[in-house]
Length: 109
Image (cartoon, rainbow, N blue to C red; front, side, top):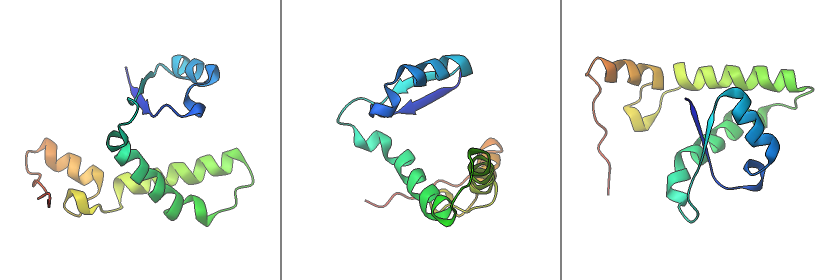
């Protein structure tokens, strides 16, 4: 079952959100309180989504926003390079990982 991981913000505590997760077959996993480091990757993605996509448009409809965000996510996964994964796109890195040729990044202390 696919998992959606969120913090415990009020938008994720609603009955409507829980019902939507059930309808979509998603398991809702909440991050423990006072563990912001576990939320760092999604917060970084939200910043990138805002800076490189959402702030460039004034959407006229949900459909328009959905199309633009969907195209951005495809770009983010297939084309945009990421320094944390050796300047590859996530798709390229995943392929290299599956082929056991992905180089490990050196984490600076």
